[in-house]
Image (tube, rainbow, N blue to C red; front, side):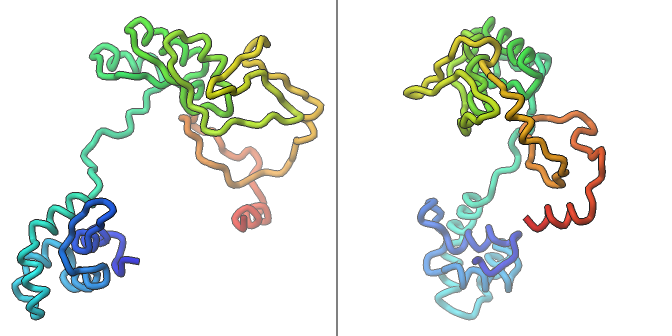
Length: 237
């Protein structure tokens, strides 16, 4: 699309601009011309440094007159990388410094962090500091029962409500954007083990999706190595 390698796309965008994102670019220079110039000069800075040597009068004058626009455009299309990242908080000990310094406005917990007990411990500490809690990453609507035990919980994230199956059912219903709990103990889940056993397979899958949660060392390793045919079949899908 841009006529250059991935590392030079931002230089092309800096010249061509993007009206939908309010990136001015250089007037009269489109993606094709921008790619030609970047391929010739290497990057935007070198192009602008040597703009006075460009033979085409109009192109030379346009670049010289709009140098600042081009540099501003590059700032606008460049992803900012010097920002805090990672910060995977799982245990109460991880959260305590943020509680102490009052550097968090809302705390999100999940049963996938340190289990339901760990999530409740963090929520309890946040409650003592009058910090609101949200429950994130819920598979289906299982967090609804946890939310009912957290007085400072303000919302539950439900990426995809799970449909009931013959093997399992639960007593949580979504009505008008609210999770309505039933009166069954625990998560309110009823499992039909006879139906569940019908889903048992002995085949090993060599591909699995990424997990949003941390995993213990060694998790996911094969106990029985897959055969060449199994690997070939999995890779073909």
